[in-house]
Image 1 (cartoon, rainbow, N blue to C red):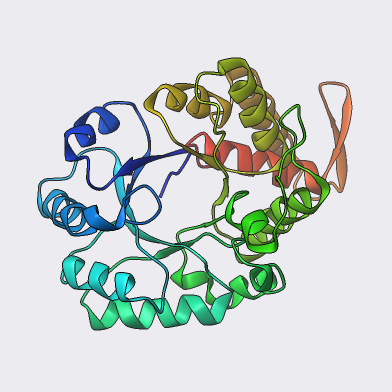
Image 2: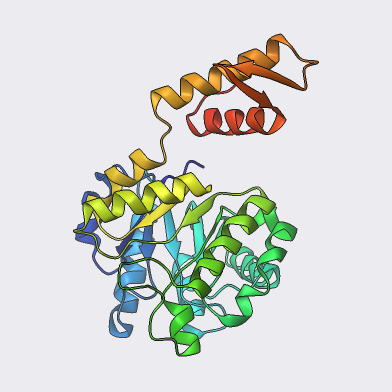
Length: 283
């Protein structure tokens, strides 16, 4: 499942679904949780279930349900019974045990979908990030958030005045990144809330791609093109990666060799192969 851009859409706004799909996002997150007021939950469930029952387009359709263990979650699953979204986004996830509990409930409701946990929304969740590798076959990826966690611990904010994350939330971000790669699943960066700030978004998305995230969530269709560009290797990077792979293929017994005047060894080959995989190329 290619997940460069994942665009949130409120489940109770079905008139926005088509526009969201036309944005070029790799996936839509049809939201039943935070973006939907309690009074509108039933309307949102009906609209999301209706969309899932229709013919699918290019974009993957994910559903963010309400937290496990709540009556809202139970109602979400009843509305989605027998349907197959491309993934279920699980808020307030707390490691492998919560994924297994969610998967059990999905299976009982006849919902065939992997799970994309939001892995950092409670203090306890931080200490369970290393357990996701135990349930990697159940996962569509791993992502994090910088809003619920500070609220849970009474912090004033998760960001500095210039938009950078404060130290505790940089830790949460980094641990999520490593947890995703330890599990061998997509590492999805959190949202950039200032959707009119294109320069800020471009820098944020570029940093995420640089650091090893494989995709990013969006809150507005206007963010999608910038995010897709950030997580799509450019022609020069692809050409260099091809040369590295070709050089090692031509000298399979070499531990290190020169490519473009630079010494390359096994980690460079791994990086090149991963970049080509992101570009949709296979050896």
